[in-house]
Image (cartoon, rainbow, N blue to C red):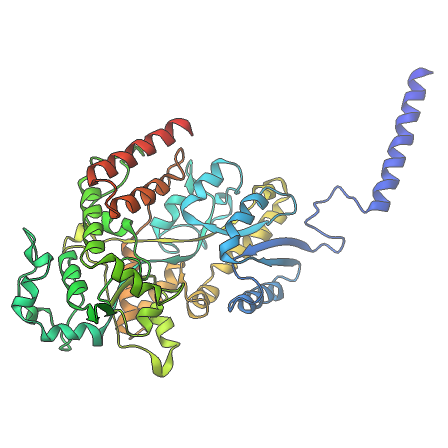
Amino acid sequence: MKVYKNRKLCLVMMMILSAMCLLSGCSSKSDKIDKDGNINFNFWSIFPEGDPNYEWMLSVIDRFEERNPNININYTGISFWDYFTKITTAMTDQAGPDIYLQTIKDTGDRARGGVSMNLTPFFDDTYNTGEEFFFSQDILPMTYKENVYGVPYSLDNRVLYYNIDIVNQLKDTTDTDWTNTKVGQKTGTTITGKPSDLLDENGNVRAPQTYDELLAYQELLTVYKSGKITQLGFDVNIGNFKIENLVFTHGGDFFDAEDNPMVSTNEGVKKGFETWYELTHTLSQAKVNAFVDTAGDNTTNLFWSGLVGIIVSTNEIPWQNDALGDSKINLGAAPVPYNNVEENRYNFSGGFSLELSNRLSKESEEVQKAAFEFVKFLTSEEIQKEVLTVTGNMPANKKVCDAFIRETEDPVKKVVFNEMDYRKPYQYIYDAPNWFGEVQNSLTDYVSDKRSLEETLERIQSAIVQLKETY
C-alpha cells in the first residue's frame, strides 16, 4: 500500500508539472526553436544604430533570412569602444550572443576556456580553413588542440602611405642636405647622399625603403615657421604604426617557439626599440606634440589636410581617399620599410573572427548547422566584397582578395592587397595574455628617457616571466 501511495503521489506531481509547462510554454525542445519551428539566434557586432555601417549590416541579415526563411537573426550592435567590455561578460550568459565578432588573436584562449565552440565538424570540401579560402596566418591563432574555433571575418594590415606632392619636395635637396641629417651622420648609415637615385619610373621621389631613409625623410620634410612646425615629415603617433612593425621588420620576435620570452636577448627586438627611439628623437618632441595636438582626436586628419608627408596606417586609407572626391590627395603607397631584407618583410596584422557560443554545443545538430550557415554567409564572396567596399575593412576571404588584386588597376590599392601576404600578428601567449601591456608601458618610459634600452628590455622580460609564473 505504501508503494502504491508513493506512485500515486508521483503521478499527481507529474500531472501538475505538465500542466505548469503547458501554461508557461516550457518545452523539452531547444529555446532556439520557436513553436513555428523557426530557429532564432542572437548576433552581436561592432556596428550600432547610428554607425555608417549599421544599415548595411541589417541588409546583410535581411538577405540571409530571405534565403533561409526558418532562421531568424536578432541583431545587437555595440560601439567598438564598448564592445569588448560588454561581450566579455555576455558571452557565457544564457541571454548573450550565440554568434559574435571577436578578435582573432585570442580565439584560442576562448577555446581553452570553453567559451567558443569547436567549428571543425562543420567544415567540408566546399568550405574549410584551407589556403583556398583563408590566409594561414589568420587560422593559426584560432586553432586550439588541432581544432578551429573561429572563422576569419575581416582583417587589417599596415602599409606606408605618402603624399606624393609633399615627398617630391626632396627633389630640391642636395647631397649635403642628406648627409647632414642626423641619420646621415650615423655610423653605418644607408644614406648615400644621392637623392637623384630615389626617383621612381614616373619621375616622383619614391617611398623610403629603409628606416634610415625614413629618418631622413622625417627630418628633411619637416618645415618650421617662427619656431613652430607647419609641415611634419613623419611621426610614429600619426596613423597606426606599431612597435611590432619595427621588431618584425628587423627580424625579431618577442617569444621563441616554446612561447618563452626572449625580449632581452633577441637582436631584432633591440634594433626595433632603437629605431623607434630614433624616430621619436629626430625632431623636438615638444614641437611635434604641439603640432599633433592641432589635429584633435584623429591624427590622420593631418595627413588628409596635407600637413604630414608620410604615415604608416591600416588598409582603409585608399578607399577613404576615394571618398574625398575633389579633395583627395596625390596618394602613394609602399611596404613598411624592411631594410631590403626580404626575410624580414612583415607588417603587423589584426582582425576580427566570427565565433559561436559554446552554449550551442548542447543544442541539436539542426540548430548548430543553422548558426554555422550564418557564419558561412558572412564570409561568403558576396558579403566579403562588401566588407571592403562598404566598411573599408580588408576581406578575410582569400578568393575575394585575390580577385581584387586581379581586377584593380589602382597602384596604391595593389600595394595594400599585395602586402596581405606579408602580415604577421603578435603572438598570443596563453599564460600571459596581457603581456603586450608590459611592452607598451616600458616603451613609453624608454622614449621618455626614464630608462636605458637594456633596462627597458630587462624590465619587460622580467614582467612577462612573472606574468607566466603567476597566471
